[in-house]
Image (cartoon, rainbow, N blue to C red; front, top):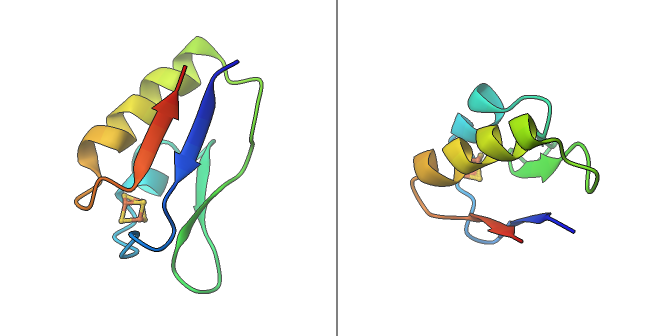
Amino acid sequence: MTKILIDREACIGCGSCTAVAQEIFEMDENFKAKLKKKEDFTEEEIKLAQEAVDMCPVKAIKIIE
Ligand code: F3S
């Protein structure tokens, strides 16, 4: 089952992930990214999450297949 991980220590709150994949990522009250959903990702969501991985300036997002 595919998992998406966010390294919240590494996240600098740039917000790119929430812009590109708002179904999956949101900002919390500390301006760190967090997951809106944790499982049952569709293929489309995984594609968007991969874009977020590529865009994150500090490489804080990982997709585990
Ligand atoms: Fe943080 Fe990277 Fe998203 S810095 S807000 S995880 S794009």
